Image 1 (cartoon, rainbow, N blue to C red):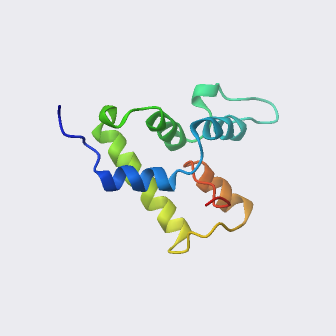
Image 2 (image 1 turned 135 degrees about the vertical axis):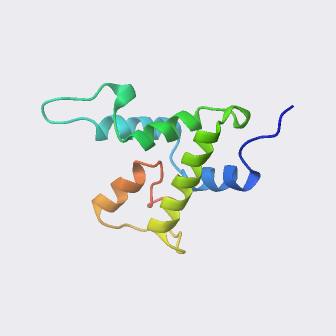
Amino acid sequence: MADSIVTDELWQEFHDAVNMSSRELADWLRERGAGIDTEEVPDRAGPAVGRQVLDILGRRRVDVTRADAIVMAGVVQRVHDQRGADAVPRAGDAAWRHSLMDFGHDPLRD
């Protein structure tokens, strides 16, 4: 069996940072892509990185590609940058929360 592209540390950090289930994230991306007059096609709704996170959540670790690992590391970094050292659930302004939710992280959750 080939070695995994994703380290144990990155795998765990990604799944800690992405605290929304794949169903919750898919629902959020569809909601985010809905407009007053139009609605995006469900598999194209929401930001590209959110769709990439959703795709990664649906994969087994051995099926993760190098490109996926780069996305995973970027998501972990973005969540850490936005949340800082304080990972205690807290409310912020709606735009801040929604931007994190686009990555699969809800700051109101543990």
